[in-house]
Length: 250
Image (cartoon, rainbow, N blue to C red; front, side, top):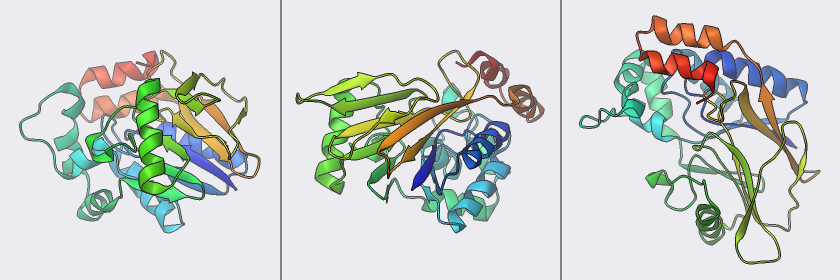
């Protein structure tokens, strides 16, 4: 079973289409979307429609913080990250908002626990961006879900945390296209990066494929038409920064 793991699409239709085409060429068997389908980008309707179709075909999809904000935009928080929530809410139809609202915070797909942020209080949207945060995530995944393998998004970076012979998580930075051994006997947490808004100063979209039978994960970078994605943001009248950052990868 090969599972394509896509997270933080952020209404970037061009990046999503490019990653899906790349994943299909790798012979994937199943899709998993790890939240933040919307927010920042200019094509929320199209992206949610694709997610709804994939869900009907059996994909696992969990809710992200931007999905929750699109359902119920914050009234008293006008920070940059929340500035597209009201616009996105207005663009989506009732069925699309209902779909986002009904998404679970966690899901099990085979041996994987899928969650947008951390398995430690997933509704609090904690970032898994340190060894300590990965420890908390892994411990709660085991205690609450009896899961040893966790896949998350939210941090817009591609990283593997694993337990070696010691008691604490160790950090590993994968190379694009190089399979990383992820044996079933080892506890690990993987962050798969962002499809629609990478933040490592590179514009190429991020996603990963987990090969359950082989016990390995491959992290991919995929080029896409970020200029078209930026144009969609500008045409929507959204903040210019959200368009500019796509080429800069930040």
